[in-house]
Image 1 (cartoon, one colour):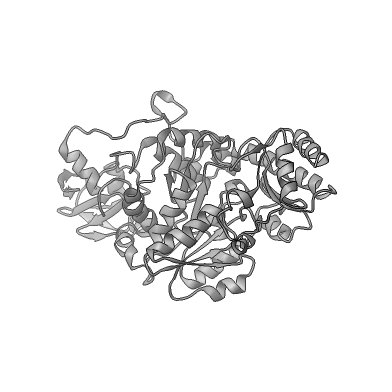
Image 2 (cartoon, helix red, strand yellow):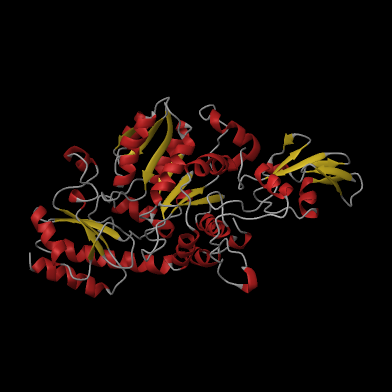
Length: 71
Length: 417
């Protein structure tokens, strides 16, 4: 399925749905204990990564607070 | 916090907690003495600044050597994240300014390190932040002093130099009931005596220059976020965007992205490396500091020329019971003693051969100072009394030399008074 991840197109080897936890694993997202996940513009609760589902066409942002810049 | 910390006992965590393998199989995180970090493309740097990617940008904001120490300190204190700073005062200033705004009030223990007292009473007052000081042993007065403007409760685990030991869990209960965070300066107790998160500290601050570094070779500080405070509160509207995005990391995110970045009190990579070296031996050194302090306190308490000794490990100390419970039978490496008067205190200091007369604590070496004429000299008699500083008082940071040599040094100097 095709997603937009951090503003870029990404193709994921999954049928039509994947949990956010699985997506973090599949994409080998760095420092998962700190990452904030925004799905289609909504910030997800950290303890809801297993339950939240990403579907074909969704937009996902992985955000960190450790770097520079503003909020 | 590194996954490797899970399940380790404290002494093991000091060595392995939060660590990651270094390049080339190095067992030490290298000192990355670089101001800034280069990327191949403009897009990569844009992603970093947007928070879409993780990496280093500029050492004031972050650096691999600093990050390595931050992860280790977070692991040791069971926190969710840590920020290391240029000094202990930088840690306190940064952490406090991340929470309070003009018009807000801090409720603080009156028994404070002189630098913190000056920050709260004088410097922050100039920015519209009022601090109310209360006797940390009077919990009713503390609870009664909370008002609508209170945004932070601040306390030291062992008052320096007053050597009083507040009941941290009782402070935490009052903070929780009041809906404000509890910030605890655990410099004197160190993580070895107590992980103050377990006692209810929401934010822990350290001067790592002291016992954590341990050999007095670098100045540093640390802020550790317990992740326990609920920042989704009407009292803290300035945390709203950070809570919305980063949830229980809201404090660390706001501190890092605004206050720490803007005030710029960052640690130096070399200093962070040296603090990390000290951290590995903290337990061994603290065991000896505590044992030596107890021996010296016992000797001094029995000496005819010593008017009084203030050490929470002495059974007749009013703080013995709470310290014994809170610190599980260990009482730290700092004590104070009183002589007849100021000239006697000066003669004692001048007569010591082993102990160094200087303004510091937590070195391997035994250190002494006369606080009333030095670190607390700027304060009125009234304020000195509040801080427990009198003219006849000498503060001792007991080192890890052979206790017999420390006692002999004091015995000789006292005999010659």
